[in-house]
Image (tube, rainbow, N blue to C red; front, side, top):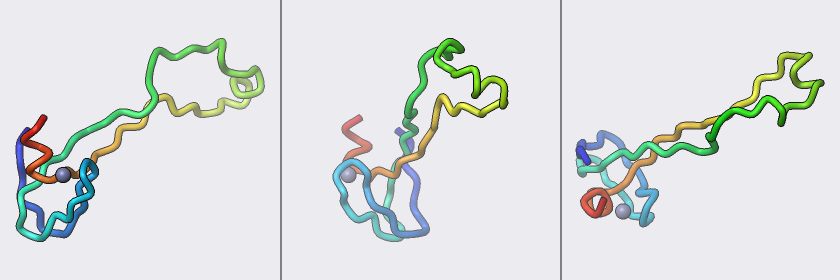
Length: 71
Ligand SMILES: [Zn+2]
């Protein structure tokens, strides 16, 4: 994982450690949800009203350099 130097304070999402200004940190992208879209799972109401269904949510998580090196 590529490490960067942070310009602001962060918290490691892996171990909860404090990442101070100037420390190295990594960023991991995780995907919540996903899977193949399944129109049958949508109700007729949702389809008729063009409801937007969020299938995937991509989130970036800050992690400290110690955790980053373990992955
Ligand atoms: Zn950590």
